[in-house]
Amino acid sequence: MIVEFSKYQGAGNDFIIIDCRNNEIKLTEEQIKFLCDRRFGVGADGLMTIYDSPLADFAMKYYNSNGKEASMCGNGGRCIAKYAVDNNIAKPRTLFSAFDGLHSAFVSDEEIQLSMTDVKDIVEFEDGFFLNTGSPHFVKVVDNIDLVDVRTEGLRLANDQRFSPLRTNVNFIDIKENTIRIATFERGVEDETLACGTGAVAAAIISVNYKYTHQTPARILAKGGTLKVDFIKLDNIFTNIILTGPAAFVYCGKIELQ
Image (cartoon, rainbow, N blue to C red; front, side, top):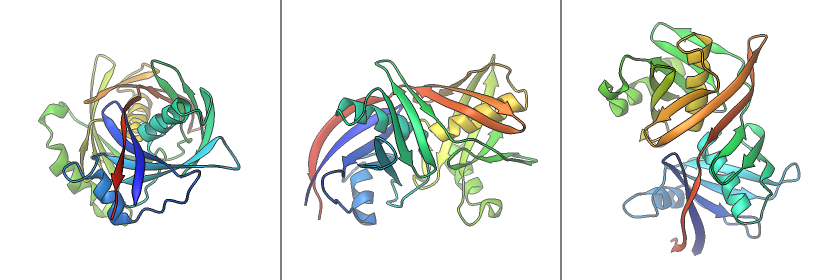
């Protein structure tokens, strides 16, 4: 089977996108793992498929690089909005459905603004904070993220029994002069990624809510680029959350799948 694909990246978080609107391409878990493999396949942190939607301009499904369908991906959402505009599937102001509901996006030449789901609960632990921003995230504030072994410590925390059975993504942040630096371990990728959109949202909410920083929109400096997060807190609910950052086309191609 020959599959056409495009590759996009948002702040270094990279994705394979496959248009499934006109044909029912049904990829197996092993095929997705192969496509995301950086040695034998295309190589990506995740894969997205795009479909027609009765509720919006299009629908997206997101899969981690381990081949399993996953929850919302913020950088992936920004990339697929850019892809939809680039391929005349949607206009610059678009609405699409995802794992956690409907998302609006505005695509410009410089950046993509994406609405995110409301956040209602924060669980406080002695060593950090847990919240769901469309995907589950544990946020740990450290003195210097450069001194953290993100893969080893992230894997340990992701597998902590507190987050069983679904596990969690893990974000390490430090705050210097109202700039939030972040390093993220993503479950499903099982490694550090250069950026994480839902993780940036989690980091911003924790940093502002607990007064580590007073600046909004919060500026999140990931290893792959800078993201901005704005939100409003009403009656202990974080709403009107907007994730803003770059997204870019990398290349397109065809690949044969067994």
